[in-house]
Amino acid sequence: MEIEIGTKGRSDGIVTEENTALAAGSGDLRVFATPHMIALMENAAMSSIARFLEEGQSSVGTLISVTHDAATPVGMKVWAESEVVAVEGRKVTFKLEAFDEAGKIGGGTHERFIISPDRFIQKVYNKLSSK
Image 1 (cartoon, rainbow, N blue to C red):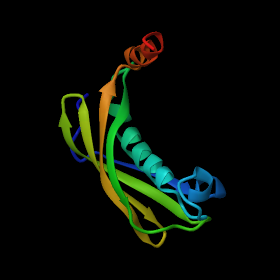
Image 2: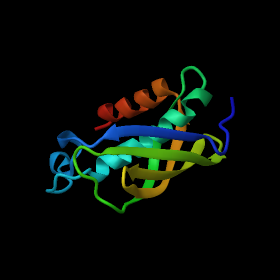
Image 3: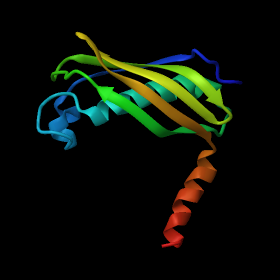
Image 4: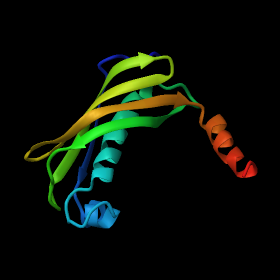
């Protein structure tokens, strides 16, 4: 099945002590961490195209460019939305936005490649024998 331009995805969460900048080591404040916002965005993108993948396929993120424009406190709901904006062979490009209950907190673009997990993992672990 071919991935359709305009396909949308969403991933939801709650800001907890475990996903703050302080816990992630990306800052010293108890606010939603940028690395966790990025993971939420990637999850929205990954899950949105899963239904288009053939058995034995997966996708991996290869590029992400985002801004984190507003801080979110512990206890607030957060979510990310993705939209497929381009498909070029195995490369899928997404528009991303992240929100909390007060409004937009970030946005950007993301690229994922469709891969064969077995071949991908084999190639990765071949690195161990070449060191």
